[in-house]
Length: 90
Image (cartoon, rainbow, N blue to C red; front, side, top):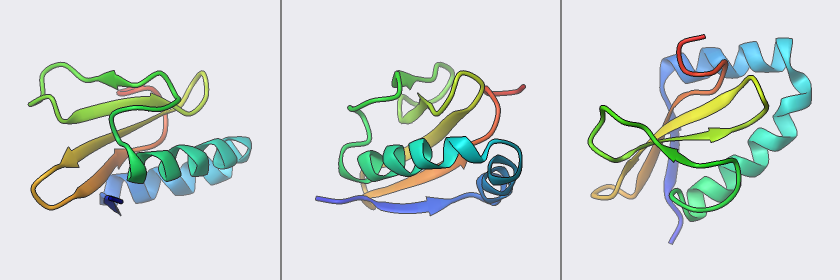
């Protein structure tokens, strides 16, 4: 079962920043997104459940500096990418 992938407006801006300032990270990001739609809670990228949320927000490492942060919605089988640039609030 594949999850539907969507991007917040912040994540869309982050993707533009990533492609401008760290284009070498794009192939890794593409690989992570492919994994996320198939199994959002397991795989590569040092998956971390973020504290302070309801247990459905995760982070994966794109590069040493950049992380992808996303929320999993089981009821609608959707993954919403919240950010993809920087390391949390960097």
